[in-house]
Image (cartoon, rainbow, N blue to C red; front, side, top):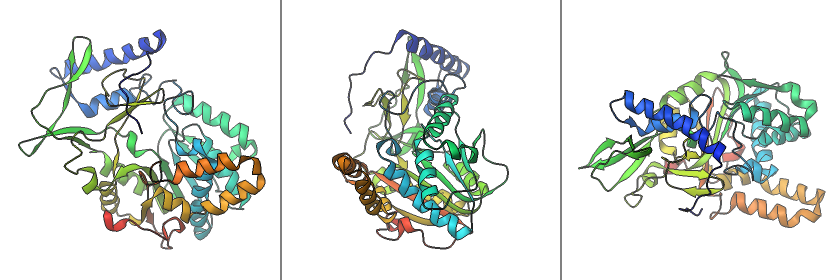
Length: 372
């Protein structure tokens, strides 16, 4: 992943949109005596109603957006997830799937198509997504790929009031949660604040040479997941590290990164509402939050091993037999998803269970739980 300092100039329309959000952020800073915590800035930049990056009508995912996720790279990724969901649904005797933040909808479409092929469709496929633009795009994608299964899909504005039996799936959800930014000063964490500097935003200066971040909302979020699950599995895939690696002394600038028109850079204070702001996931914190929420840790491994355990090789062979002309493209997809230098080791899979005791197929080999 290459970080750049050179970014395309947004259009006049995009800049006007960003300025509307910037005005709201400036007003919040003024109300709060001249600065707000970085976490609040990130919350507004990503989720401010009508203007934030994830809730405004901007195309975010795919070649015309700012980044590409694993389901966009290859249907093999979603088929592997579907295999894991199928195991859980079979053991439970049926149930539902809830996808958190369904992106373009291609993962939902590919999972449903594969689950139909293997005779293990969920009773309902629920999608929780805050973006009206993405909801519309998801409907279009599902209508295009699996129109006959659209009646099983339901969009939610909030977590279901009645706990579900089945699987909750989240791909690249945790990295988009607002984080606290801190700098160590004489060994103590100093929470960083954002202020205004003329018309720009800037961090309030502190003296320290080690900056990182943490997610204060994680415990409450995991409790909400536990409350949503009557019986089954919570499966999360994202990029990140175990605690010791996340906060190693050499990682002096933390993990915050921004995505704008397929460029990766490290300045979250520009173009509010136009760029994605992310932080890597501390999987040790995720595991502890899950355990504190009375969930069982059911598995933790790299994305590469999760996909391998979930039938990637067989799915690749089947896809190749169905379309031999796509051998090169299929091989490229597998390499991107699996190689250590690509997504294979930087991304991890972690699963929690509730009222479900069988060993999950996706975590049978190469567990990394001892690193947490």
